[in-house]
Length: 429
Ligand code: HSE
Image 1 (cartoon, helix red, strand yellow):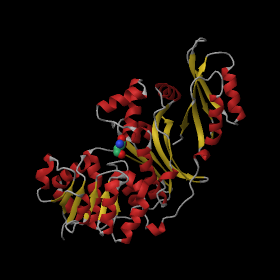
Image 2 (tube, protein in one colour):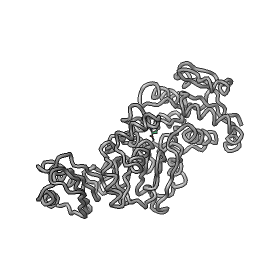
Image 3 (cartoon, protein in one colour):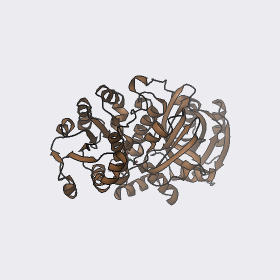
Image 4 (tube, protein in one colour):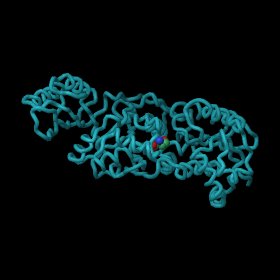
């Protein structure tokens, strides 16, 4: 059988990894795919010198759009990145030209996945993006194939390695967010502009994709509630430990009473749960199916070699002719499901107040909870200094987000509360 002719657009870290992996394991890939995977064309702003020997038999395109329509390519691998611009144009053009596409671009799929999946189907092509969610962890393939017999109940995970690294460092060193972020940037673990990671958007892109695959609905990124980790303090980490929890930025999607809930925010999880054990830059996804129960997938969520592993896994599927529909069912079978509002989230909460240490403060705070119909589970206060402020920690029994929003507003209005109250949702996983 003739080799699958691969064209790569974008030769950054991941593109370089794909070029190297295709070369290093060519025989293994051919044996597994039943045909070779041949690097036929490449495009980038510049050819990285280190890759030149591996690209000598590939046609070079200065313009990635030329590669997208080029007759010497069967599959286009888009590794440029970004939800708009050239990346989107390359993918659209490739699909319109009847070529299958493999991409690691989570923002593109989260924002335009529905139209792109339709364009793929209309043109008899495939669209695969395993590397877009949790990097090297083959969670999409597992959900579409190995777990295909199940109705998914809930899927959640640590979907951003940068945030997990920062939270892990804060926990292990007792340092605050700003300090750990600055160090992570200096070491190259965090981007110079860290917003996409630390404000939760990268995890939200991945969660929107997981939701579509899990529940067979169109991708609905705008329905994801997103809150990042900037407000988590060293104090919160310390109190979480005292209460038996760890703080993780989780993406959670599930069937709620009012529809599909999709949320990304810092969570307190019991320290002995599998997800709480995942530390540093690792990613992990827990997929809960009605027959299989809980399945846990963990591994590297980014980086040259793990991400290349996911991209080439997709290429091997294409070479075998066994690519599943991008969102597990044909586009015509996707069913739009109602989105549950964040206000309907139910569960327990951790509340951290910084208060003046004086008589009556706890009573006033307790009254706020009582007025909102929220039951307090525990109260913690450390330190005693009538001239200063102290942290006052309360945890609640299960309640709604709507009630806790009322509580937060009322607490912020108390004279003795000197900082914006911090709320962290406690998840029973
Ligand atoms: N920046 C992401 C992370 C990896 O920190 O996990 C790519 O999505």
